[in-house]
Amino acid sequence: MKFFIISVVLIVLMFGCTAPSQTPSSTTSLSSQNTITVGDVMGKNTVKIGDTVSLDYVGTLDNGTVFDTSIQPVAQQAGLPSRSSYAPFTFVVGSNQVIVGFDRGVIGMKVNEEKTIHIEPPEAYGEKSDNFVITIQTANVTGGENLTVGSTIYANGGANQGRITKIENGTATVDFNHALAGKALNFKLILRSIQ
Image (cartoon, rainbow, N blue to C red):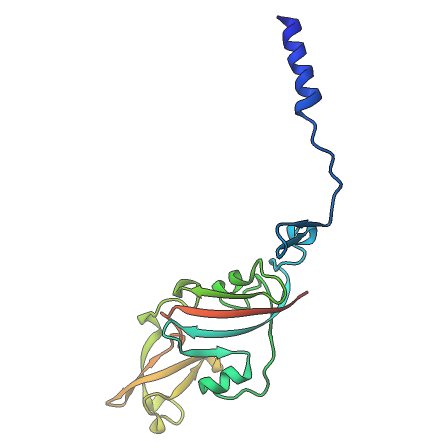
């Protein structure tokens, strides 16, 4: 019995633990059109947390309305306010410079890759909250006599922006929710560079 066990172990060691001889290659072909490099597998050519990326984007609501873009002809066609310049948007992935869903959406992308992402409100600008809607006396606002529904006012030294939704009996209702709060967002992303 001892001899049989030793023989089995030797056979497994000799034949079962050896792999066919392979020469490492920097490229493994999946098909004639898809190639993966060692750099791709190791994440060197794909976006990861900490990378500085530049990308073009088009942001739309679920109804197709364009609300933001880095591409001038798209902005003009959508009737968005003109910017001083149009260029790819640059940020550091994972540094809280952008909304969570946008940050997560670029991870794994490669240069020149196009991708469309859908972001629900919790990973965008959050849900609308009544806590961000306040009523103020118009007399306490500089230029309060000129306030109109739809006007924008600023609080905390300009850090917070609110929209006046109602004016009545010397008071104004101001909504400090982000304009895109409660809305799902869609982004077409085109990755231009990874640093």
